Length: 264
View 1 (tube, rainbow, N blue to C red):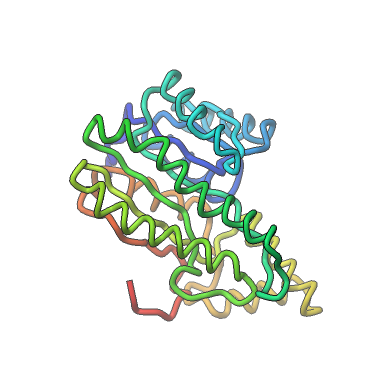
View 2: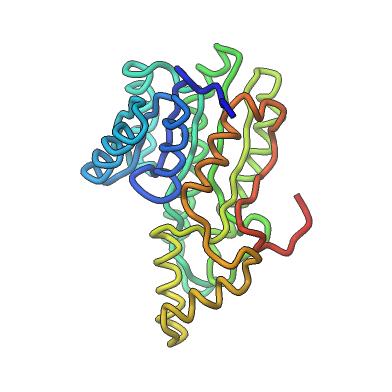
């Protein structure tokens, strides 16, 4: 299936590894020019070079800390000057730390909000004006399956990502008349550094081996395994494309059947 992304400009955050990198590679593989952002400049440059080599599409590294409010519009301006205005935004950031309600203080709350919720809002603010001017655009927020079923021990992820989903739904109503689609993609257990780190935390706390922890996780997933980042990236690329032109205001779950909820 040709997704029709040739000559389109995408901006993917958290793209030095994991879900962000897989999303950037999938978009570039469909012919889009991609700007990738993350904090680690060296790792990001390696990721951008590898994506260019793998896909033949242009991939530009734009280092960015998404908790730096002033840096976000500056990054968007740089992308516009090098590639053109952003037509597809994939807003993604590292997850907030695991923990339960009693384990956090006010500073941790503010940090989690800045990383997960405020960054999504600011990234959208940076690209919506040019999308409105063109009468078209796609904004995709990478969230979590925790927006469908809360995950024990991930209080801040449960809180902050749910807020992003509420924002996305509202934005889809407000921006639809301008030709801008807004979606969320909610990963379940995908084989990423974040999931591996959470598995290690669980192993350390429970006294189980990491292999035992992973086997228990797999047993709850009907497909019997963790997802591959590529499988997630392919969903993002489809949703960003004109093939999904009648989809907006919804969350697409990529979880191998893990969730029990029947609610959309």
